[in-house]
View 1: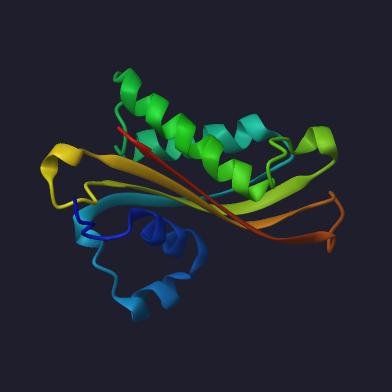
View 2: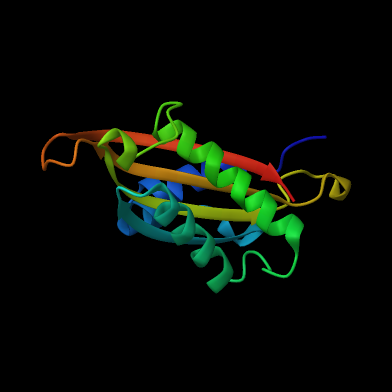
Length: 145
């Protein structure tokens, strides 16, 4: 069970680096399906919905398959847990986020029996809803499909 590529590392790079920075790296992205997006909110459900919508619009998951939606949901929650430092709340705690995200799907292992995995990475800011009161945050969630 050896790894081909680190699916989480790819997701983190896609979420955190600019387009220009990504082109200089020349990442082997042909092995994975992925998309990127942005979301800013004081509402956790809006963040979750933005990622789910991006995954569906970019055909990374099929909404008709419960297991795919379920896997994505758990990867999102795990990633948000990192951003919120274990306090899975934003607006309820007078916090707001401005995040870039990346969703990556693929087979990161040489053995095809390991199946497909999905990773969701967030990078951006979190803080009080006052400009200049935020700081950087990052989160990563990975789940099997």
